[in-house]
Image (cartoon, rainbow, N blue to C red; front, side, top):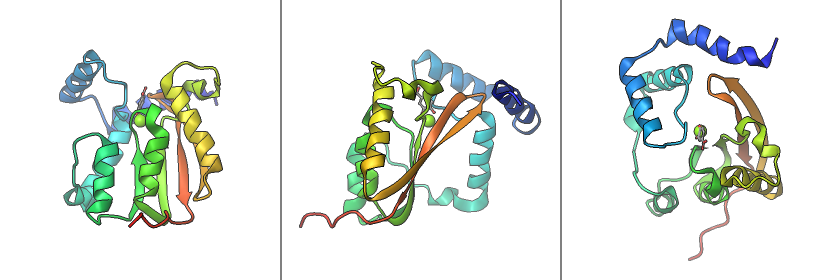
Length: 179
Ligand code: DHB
Ligand code: MG
């Protein structure tokens, strides 16, 4: 089958299982008008998040608003770690800094996910001047060289286009913080 059918397959299932919603459409239009990157999940992916929330984990959410490179170290200071799973879906140019922050909050056996590392194939362009491409290439090189993780990258297709995520297993813990 053609990869180009993937968006149509998304629409087929979305029309049945996660149909259009006027409020959501207005929010997405406002985000685009404000110049935000298209970091929203697709309707079917959103339904999956709704399912997780309805499975009873919503009460465990603790929302911290701010620059993650400021707020994440505070979680460690508060003794909130280690975390089992870290999903990074932030500005791509700072990906390596988020990896360092994630390693400080996890343990051997934790899983790290970094979204949008394929970027319609732009990740292949070593001479790209796009800071996001540069950031995900730096991340890939660091994941390859980082002895504390074993990593892979998986591609995805759908109404959100062609992208993918890097998946890393932490295999040894972060060194103890300086005392
Ligand atoms: C972009 C960022 C995202 O997190 C995403 O899911 C899709 C696109 C972006 O920076 O272009
Ligand atoms: Mg993303």
